[in-house]
Length: 187
Length: 187
Image (cartoon, rainbow over all chains, first blue to last red):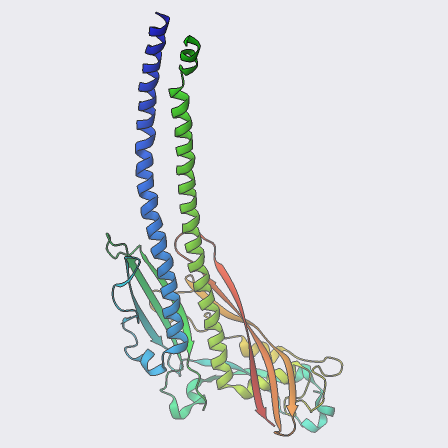
């Protein structure tokens, strides 16, 4: 009799245990699925950041001025091509170049009061505090009058998008990099 | 035998509860590491953007140095206390006697290499996305090469890039970059 009672209690326990397992394990499976997808997305985002860095380095320091500026103002495809695949994920990117006009690049430059340099013994400035006039402004078009239409500064905006094998490109899975490049000529 | 049965009673529930606790700890760890990984990705991206901002500041300064090398050299010479019209006489100390240098000209020179004076040309981008500035420009060595009658100045550009991501609730990321350049002026 006592044994029978004990068996009954165990059955209740087992039923309770199964119920608890059901309530806990099922959401856990959902969570596992969620974190698994999240991990893949994180992985893709990390790869996208690396690809963006490589592409921006190319645009900043490798590609020639003419190639970079061709198609300026409109979106150009990045060098990896459309739907570039890494670990099953797809990546695509485009960059837009926004050139500065030399007439709008008006820089501030210090102006020095002219004085007889021979008055400065051993080259030491006799009146360092009063050696300057109000700063002047000069545009790059004035500095380089013969090539005033040649672009010397441009903004670059790079947008990289990615998608998992099962997904589509969207506005969330994307990143943007901005930079400004100068074209330094020896003239 | 009866004793053994007594020991077995009530085992299912503690076992399941222990299992459930383990699973929940595992799930919590998964969620935590996923969040960490996501934060790490955002942090990398943030760094990348701030780094390109600082590089952009360096690019602007290099452009200005290439356009106005004379003014840069003169400002550097004055900052050391020497007369800009004479330069530094061969064999002289880096700082003029009494250290009477005037750094104002150097400050004026780098004051406009930033996104405040030259905002982004890229559409839908403003300084809240990213900004940069040259924060310092100083001479670290200077000498006159008497054989070539050439003043040679080594100077350091210090640039600051700031990036703000519109996701992840992260604060503005700041990256500093230092570049050393060599300037020459024929005497």
